Length: 297
Image (cartoon, rainbow, N blue to C red):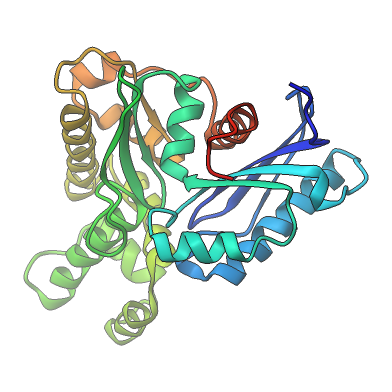
């Protein structure tokens, strides 16, 4: 096939940040960059602004003159792309890319982890999702329902759990522990300041409390229990997606990798390091779409 794109761009856009990888027409990686969050739930204009800024930074990092957008094909794995209204609006605001393919960041993580082949991933970061590509090439997913009621085992989920324990300690319903004291200190030191923080906190703010759970896990049984609870949530996702236990599994994302020691032993044994990340999956997605004219443009 005669490729008509000077550059292929892969984007991973989530609630914590945006990552971009740029490849030439031969699909060899040339440059990369990280930038501000671009989850669609934070606003379509904000998402596009973060993505374009990060792409510009990537070209600068690679000392590559910025091309016309019409010379580029872009694949994007975006948090919130399962919302068809947000996804369509994002498409409509395309600033000029010659080809654009959008899917969830969970799907691009799945493609990156297993090189487009059948397998299972549980991706855990600010949010979480489990996804499978079956041998029939049918895809299914679990969790990923979003903040605040879903995304079990995620950073925001851990933060909410830690806040609940802290609230009980402030009330005297339980004793303070190192975790609850650290949460209170982080959120303002007084119960009044904590209440104000809670009133303003969104997904990203709650996820900032997740590191406190990890740093206190050795000295605080409640923190440790939260991490093992997160591990059980991940195991349940995997079991639902791969009931026959016959597909490769990768636990992905920075938080997902940090939770691997807290997984049940049988799942720890089965876990495989991902072949690539969500940006590589996004590249894989958009490149394959140029080879398949029937795929959504």
